[in-house]
Image 1: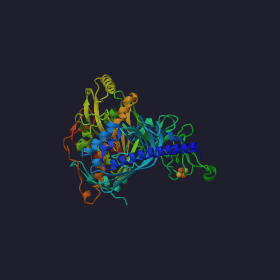
Image 2 (image 1 turned 45 degrees about the vertical axis):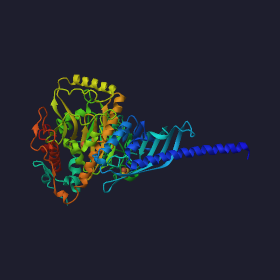
Image 3 (image 1 turned 60 degrees about the horizontal axis):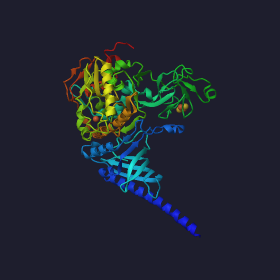
Length: 190
Length: 450
Ligand code: FES
Ligand SMILES: [Fe+2]
């Protein structure tokens, strides 16, 4: 093996290592986030969101195979399930804290699961990532009162930005795999 | 054997007691499908869902799936979405454009185009027609059943399956004025509203009437919304309190079943509230709209309303938020709610954006007020299913005997701010439908004799 070849290999390994480290750090962030939600530490969860966050959950229509462009309601135009910024997410948390928000009083038990994580893009590069876009699947299980339960499953596209040595969530698109929402309300975060 | 119900025994509005059977009994539910939903005028959609020829939107009337469509001649039609051959759901997309509806099962096809058929919905294509049917089938009889009464009222589309149904505006009576406040432009000119794309649809385990009754005029449930008030979910970026409205009155239309929470007719416009929208640009827009409204309405009579219900299952928010709600029956203990949101078509995008975000954090399954209502409605239902619970009728005595006529409105009564007068009116109407009363009895003041 020549010296050049081994340098090349080392560099290749380093790039691979950086990619893995990045993915691990993003995955760790999502797991930590899910843990905060499931532990009902909503104020701590809010601290993971950037001030300019967009939190958007479109509705899905039943459309023909050749009409997929119209499957989801349009951002910034149509009605959706959720269309939030930081102020209103903070208000939702404030509502939970009132103790008289009947939809979550007594509080639901939730489990947030994330899988199929992919890093879709990195800026400027994996060595010093500042902005990352990701794609994953989510499963949010909600059980409340005696026997009520809901399972929310779908795809999530997230954008994370590096701020203060940690990630901050800048954008979350939540694509629920349902047409008629089978849950009576959305008093959980995704 | 059909179980005969003592409807008057279940609905005692004189004493303000209504049986829980109305909210849990399956046999009553089946009868409602036939006696209420197959006769009453029902909201089926909005013209904005079918702007172009051959556009369609799949809606519901009671438990029946229907196709709302616009044909090439521009007529808005409502067809039963169930193939006359073996019942297949002919149209299985939520919305789209189709020159013919072709059944996926055996391939019968149906057209609404009057250049091809005399009666829209008629059969135009039958596979193996010559070979199997000797070229003989009554194409109208075996077409998609067409709803006989369809009305486009300021963009909202209404229909009734009963050929003898009264004219829609008679059915509405003067409740029309209140419905107008949802459908008319904020500047007071008639119509002018459009719906945002996307209809919210979701399931709730409660009886459909629980929802319609709530929007017919329950100001009393304010304790349900304390958390939304404390969180201040107002219009701009969620500042300002939602309950800072003047006290509304329960105004109901006895004999028609409709009602809402609003203000009696007046000749004066309520003053503009500066700062309500937070953002100065949006504030300016609404200040101008308010000034135009004062000009446009002049010294004409006007009404204001916040929420209302048109019997049986359509409710609306008329001010901000502004939306149309369908409470589709699924079973005695389950409802499918649909919400469509309204904005003025010519409002700037920034205003539409602000309103959209406000609407969505107020109403719908993600709404910070609606989420709490829904929790109550489901609990009301499960706690009423037991044999013992069913023996205890619900109390509807709030404001009993306080009904006063409302000057300037035909057949309207108001019973103060906190009253179940509108619920009593609503269930009186329900009882008439359930007893199968004739339209002549149910619309006594009606002029026509169709
Ligand atoms: S069910 Fe429609 S063609 Fe047979
Ligand atoms: Fe409410």
